[in-house]
Length: 385
Image (tube, rainbow, N blue to C red):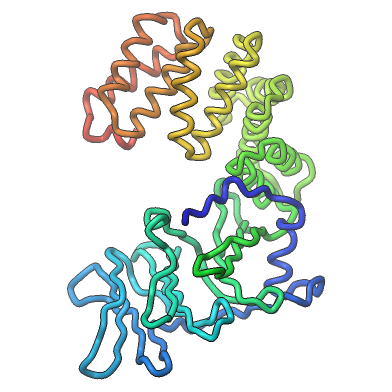
């Protein structure tokens, strides 16, 4: 089971509700029980009629083991976690069936985040998350705890959202999961509320990464126009640029161009001035091909949201169907960048060279020359470009 959060639509209720209800900040819904902060983390728990369950770091090893101690002489290794440190064991009946579930949280030594693993006690301890389908999609969050919603247990995962770094205050996301038919089901997502620009900008970025670009644009605009907190010029320019990006991805090209132009003309020393100039020129030069431009930005948004396989398929189709596209150099450049991220260096270099030959007047030539030089001189580092 792979949790696809990007397709879940966010709404006003989810933004304001969960933190108020779960943490007892509102009496709006008596079906939610307030959770209390756990100040003492346990790495061992007792299981009735079975023994002690222990999260234990193996001696002189980077592997942590989940061990069931049935007696002083009988121990069973339930699971191994390579490269992870023990953090906490939580014991709870998550589906009210009278049988115990165990949540084991582990962490990397240099990280504040934790990774949950969930087990159920049938005849023996069986792992139910991550299952085989989601093994490569571990959930990494800041905190894991159990509370109740409408008298039913839920696992709560708390994430720090920090696309923009102007905290405090910080934006947190809370995901609530229930155990149904042996699987974790995502029920609800919420965020802490506030009018500070750091909260609004990060919530806007979260909307953007969920593909809700118009809502993102509204939140960036709100951060600029009516947020609280003294906003630095750096933060203002950052919000202005990403407001323009959100409008661009929404097909609101005229509005996006106005904001890009504002950055270019009024904030000449900004970190976003040069890229705003390039985006302004690119949209201006290709607005007559609005349909193709919109298709290209849909692909760019897929890349932003890490939907790389879909983005590459759509990009290849766009290149194939539009051989006379006025910005073919940009399409090919984007494909080469994606190939680099997939460590297909030779294919990417071939495309860069092809652009130089076929489109010698392309504004991308200087960038291509620089990238080719880096790829040729430091191939071992190309994966980091």
